[in-house]
Image (cartoon, rainbow, N blue to C red; front, top):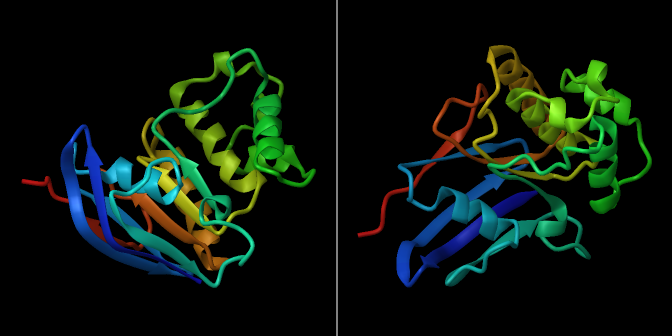
Length: 200
């Protein structure tokens, strides 16, 4: 499987954020998207996820499910942890599993995998920032998709959480997955680097 972008350009608010961007990542590879604030890291991830339309260029996923679009084969983990505070940890994860079209599975095991097995019935409102991030990461596990698009995935995680994230990511890559992560911090995994610069 190979994810590629060719001659990608991004316009926001009438100005060019970046243009002529090329990249590719194959099964088992991670791509760390780095660069200063405002250089378009988040915009690139959102375009791959189908949430923004590129001003020019195209993305392609070779070797994926032919009947599914790239966004349908991707997980997008953004800056904000999308969850309903009044729902329990398990109910939030169950919502995302159903929304993303996943099969009935062991939610408990996914929560154990991110260190939240003890909090399964706790309202999400009671979670710390790091625990909310762990719950968001559990969404990557409850429905398996080959492409992970991660925006600052280790934000709010303590050292143990960062180690856990790195281990889960290495497992995803070992299964033939692809990771594209916008980050200011080391990911704890081997990754190619795509350096973004501010457009003139």
